[in-house]
Image (cartoon, rainbow, N blue to C red; front, top):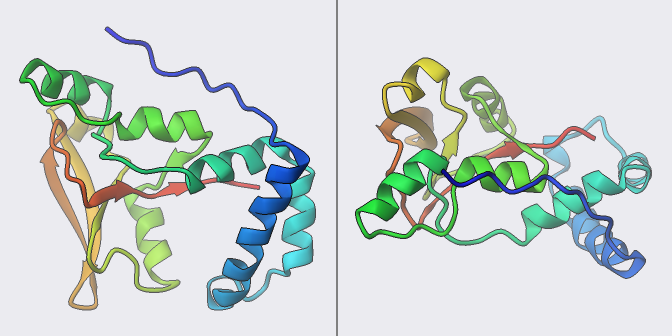
Length: 166
C-alpha cells in the first residue's frame, strides 16, 4: 500500500508571499459579506506570522485535477485501469488543510451560495467510510444537499472543501 505524501511545509519566498497576498487581498475585499467582522490588515499580519499557513494557502491556489476520495479508493480505481489524479484525503493533507465536515459545509453555505454548478467531497464519518461510502455536497434549488457515493468514484467537476485555521 502506498504511503500518503509527507506533510512537509515549505516557506514561500518573499516574492511568492507578496504575490499571494496581492491575490488574496482583493478577494477578501470583494467578499466582505463572508467575514464582516474581520479587517484585512489583521488577517495579513496573522498570515505573515504563520509562513506554514501561507504555504498551505498557496498550495490551495495551485490545485487542479480530479481527486478521488482517499488512497484506498484511488487504488481500487487503479486496479480497474482508471487512474485518477490523486485523492482528496492525501491532497488536503499535503496542503496542510482539513476537509470540511457536513456541519462546516452547511455553515459555509450560510455565507453565500457555493457549489451551485459543481459538488464537493466533504469529510465522511468513519462508519460510512468503513462500508465503502463517501459523502459529497452541493447547493441546488436554494437548498444544501448531502449525497453519498461509493468512495472510488471521481468526477472532473467534483472538488473538495477544506478549512485552514490561521
